[in-house]
Image (cartoon, rainbow, N blue to C red):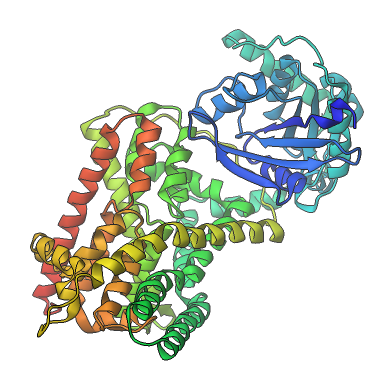
Length: 623
């Protein structure tokens, strides 16, 4: 094999947000992908590989979306430096693939002109070409190719159309192994920006004719979904249905997993003699890890909604609708996507704030992102709701449990807006910058991409159970079993263990909010990850003989008052029970000041909310 073929070619995908770039990346690389961070920054790095028919290995880099090489955010800076070959420890790309939404070339042409000035071989991939054809959009491909000085390939990434042609063009350019010209790109001034805009408009007018059948459907849908009143009402209904589905759709699979863990625990208990090994397997592993894994269906239902709404094109509309509300609370409109991402996990949500240009707006979003109800809280919420909220229908059609779940999410959102409002008024006075964004066309989600995304989320959750929860459960089980109860002891053996001692020492601090010593023990390892608290409760109550594997909710209903259960929910709305989140805040802000501030104010809010909830509920006779 020749030396050229032996060296993998590096290809970078560059394009505007919502151009289908990630779908094209998935179509090119399939499952051969890896996700990490760029050296020294928290910007996500996605790379995959493919092999051309000629036998060449090509490494494909999916760069963050940008409208220009004039970087105004950490995301855009990474894209610029990657294209220019200035990233530390990264090779410059051999070929650039400019990815464009074929139905909306107005903004991308300016970026393509900048990429052309870089001097690297380039291919233009006109993605979503099927939609352009349906609209009767006429693009002079040959003339546009001559004008831009690069080959053009039409693609439909979601259906893998044009992928072979794109690979062939990339392979041909990589085989040449040379720059297409001397780099002339530099940071433009205001006059040059206006000139580039005029040039892009000239090219567009010369080679692209208006659609014969404009996408009137998008306009009709937007007239409803973007209405200032009806649009917000629809958004609330969508969110409400999403949280109702978390309980109704996932109930069957959750019960099936729950029954499986109970059967496994009973099988081991029946076939192993009583002793430490049986106790470790049944009370430590099955009751601990199993009590978290049963919530996997509910987490996947939540992610299914988020993925579908994103692929359909509704997320950008939701950001537009929320802009006025968020602006009133002191948040930039771009903060909506990071905050929505925090419903899955605050860590990618905080990392997503790099799309916000202004540092003060970015810091405000970082500080409130952990208040959004992440998926790690779902095991806690669903456990307590199942234990203390009746499984009944209200108003003739609503599940009461789903309504309570919706209320918990709404409380997290409202508290984030309130904290943002106070932060901006106390520390960072000044007007919020205007929010400009491009609304993508509506698209039908690709089932394979949805399935792949759900599979990745499931693997992450199960992996988290193995890497974090399992080791902690071993430690908790040990603390709950040693030292053994002395001879003639009259109290449960766990009261004499290290876990019992620790819990009883700390418990007086949390007595005003209704927490018992078992809950206190759960909070400590729960700082590693919120859902670990559920696993700890499962282990502690199982070791204490108060719960069978898979029956934790029933046990809590027997041992906790309703006031205590509600107080625990209130605590978890605000508590900073995630060390990884605080670590990401430290990395993003490059200072310990902001994670300490986040930890302090969230702990104070959690204690105040739990105290108020417990005292009020007790006053109504629920204590």
